[in-house]
Length: 435
Ligand code: GUN
Ligand code: ZN
Image 1 (cartoon, rainbow, N blue to C red):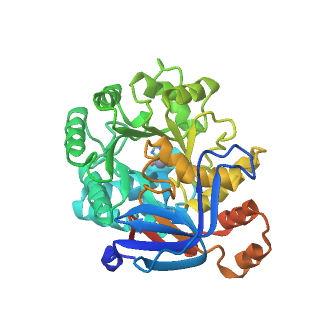
Image 2 (spheres, rainbow, N blue to C red):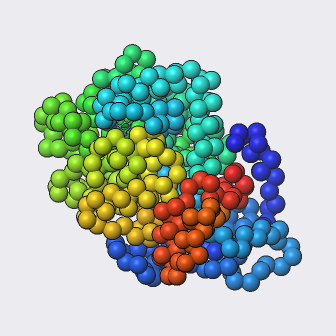
């Protein structure tokens, strides 16, 4: 769907009410628990929305002054939060035959080079954000490219859609092809300018974006750390310990560091607003450090399976874990599809992921880990009306399964395992219909 089509959606009443089966969380469900008190399920209830915020949640229909949207018999969830995804990689999704380092060289870097062109960056940002919305994702932490214009384009396209978006120009000053490298001084100027113009404007926030340790010199990592130290409200996003060949390369490049994660620790990049993608090949010391710093790991199960990177130890994590698509390493923007992949990753580890832990990680868990729990990730009064309406089942197979589900977890788990963007009936961002 193009943004031009979406403009007609933004003709939205100031006050409206949505009827459906409301599901969100009041706390983090415990690992493996099927009936946790943290799940809040209100069958056939109403959400009242005024000026883009949730102002009521009730069993009774509101009075006639409220415009009604009757989705009785459909599932209403907070909009999903994808904590790690690459805007310029839509075109390399589903590329055959390689692991991470070859995949970057062969497919990803050439696709990212095209974003030097401002028109390409702008068109790419629009298609990408519309695709997120069509998948039920209303907030995201996003990698653009090394080009300043690619970050500008994402910020501008997100602002036009009212989306909560965290991004920042990618830092890469070595081990990348011509046209995809910056240098420390220019990168610092670009970051400062983007921070001044976009960080904290509306629903936008800046992330100091280190691609990964191999593509930044120690001087660039130090510059990135200094930016974080200068403003504690900035996010930081990067990749860590995704693939074994990558981990070995980092050990050769940074012999002084105790581990891959320690490269970031030494540069001052680990803090409460750090989003670390993957974290598969971490040791016990690293895992404690992430918890101590209050950082989060963005678990990317679709990508980890597709690129053959490894099986993330979620059950053993004492730190915040959010869920992410990592497109184009991941093969779908749909977070329900990623939840099923996460279930399969845990099954291969001999663990079982509940629908509650998976859904929490894509909503309230991610919001809290980002310090945005008051605004997004739930259906509470006072939160932004970022919400999605889903069909419980689509097609004969899912309908047959849904018809025999008895307990709530059984029903929600089957939804999670079988749903995709075709189940999305409506998606609202700050009260405006966007898909
Ligand atoms: N590590 C460094 N860059 C990337 C990337 O674009 N995708 C993934 N999955 N891992 C990376
Ligand atoms: Zn990634």
